[in-house]
Length: 152
Image 1 (tube, one colour):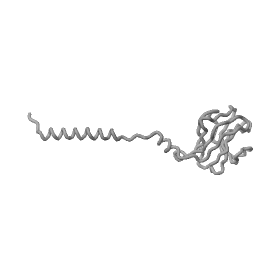
Image 2: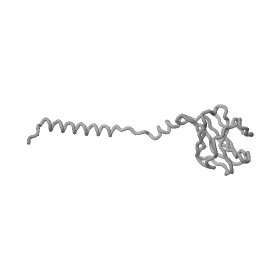
Image 3: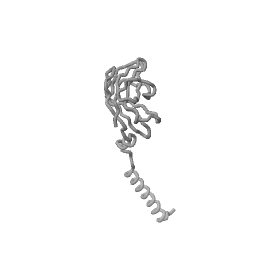
């Protein structure tokens, strides 16, 4: 059985072109740069401030950020406060909160932990222009553990 030289040449050409295209695809593959992923997910800081002691030592920084179309209150890794029985994270209308009438604040939920980085989603209906502080508040004893006055 004799093979046609043209057929052999065509098979070799196809194999060579397939191999070259595979090499080109591999050498130009695209991968996401991790630093760019962070920039894409965090679109900007809206407000921020440092925690100060009220009735209990509270340290660290609070910042309101936009990320992926949502708004969050972030407490940084240096955040720390005392343990308490009924601690909540609030956004308050006053830069130095002293009263807790329902119309003066928005609760973002229970404090997750007394130290370290954490994030709380802010409901879309909250007007951030009217919120002037982030607060760690004990509901049971109506006690302000600490607060961070927020500015642009």
